[in-house]
Length: 154
Image 1 (cartoon, rainbow, N blue to C red):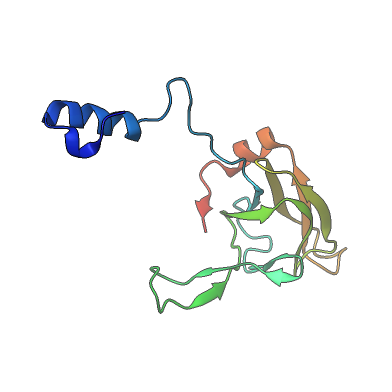
Image 2: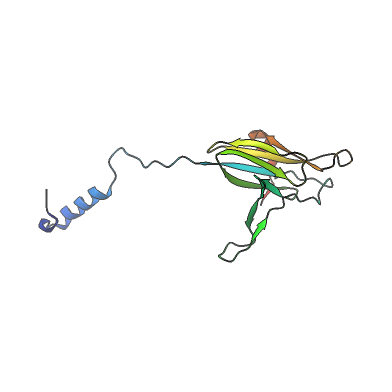
């Protein structure tokens, strides 16, 4: 084995240094599997029905929050009120979770699997028949992407 002091040629030194820096041939760097799933909550655009209602979204009895305005070290954190024509995406760790809102009659218990996406639609009830003006339902992926087209991200 060559001693580093014995290497006189810069070319030999460069080749030796490169061989230590390069990974072994055929090996690729593996990324760790995601430990979270993405949950989308959306409201389609409506003209009049419950337009003034801006519900809070809760995951496991904690209101969904995000920075207000531009992100910085002193940026305040605000709760998210989902308006008509908006959606929000939130990462949750794998496991069972409860989603609810202050304007829907029922909560939904669901299980998050790593790397998967879940879509919940906030829809409108008949205000004359129900105490709470909205419903919260798990929606198939294809339907959700179609309905979310053109909505504003929160």
